[in-house]
Image (cartoon, rainbow, N blue to C red):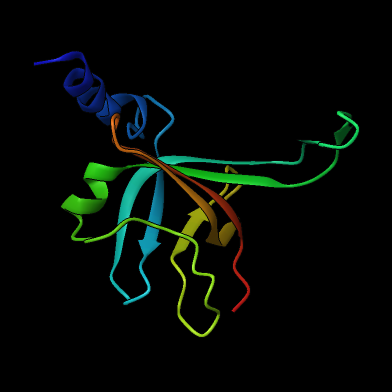
Length: 128
């Protein structure tokens, strides 16, 4: 087994382990309505760098990272992407924060790493 395969297999622990690691339950729903719970990582921080000044400013940066294999194993035939056509349904993530507050998110930008097998999505609050 090559190093890439070892790294992808290690995602089971480094990305998805909810008992001893940083894995967190995330419900993923595609535009066709297929929904499944997977484990991944979720961050929601209030810190950004202003690109014009280089200064730290208050903002909201929300990201979800999920193992691509977990999505295909759950039956998804594609991966989360931004749905720019507002007449179509978006990809939606439902996730609770550390205090148990539920958040419904949609994909703002999708960044798949097909060599490692991780998709990281920059998200925003879903507005139905």
